[in-house]
Length: 160
Image 1: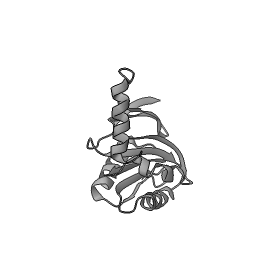
Image 2: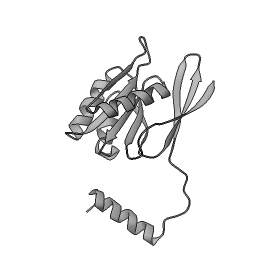
Image 3: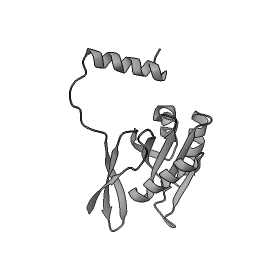
């Protein structure tokens, strides 16, 4: 087995969701779940098929995000993995809908942070072991940090 680190390529402000599912039906069901959660959302998704003909299946509402999803799915190359890129939206807007898709087995990450995917490769193929999402903590939040966090959530409209 060989371990590889695959860096997710994306613009800094773009959020993405990386997960694992189990069936070709994933592409259409994820598409429906995402557009049903946030009408007008701009996104692209790609799914790595794990059996013959071993294609990258894709869908979305934004060509740029679709191409980004395909590019990163090719780099990861792990069977039954999927990646969704969101334009002008946050994972929180669609994450529960994605988790409720029958084919979805696991979500590895949902973030805009710089991310590396830890991939294991054998003679049979590739699998995702985990992710490195952003950096490590540098300390503990103080009173000013708590105030900033609360203000930020209210600025985004997630808290009143």
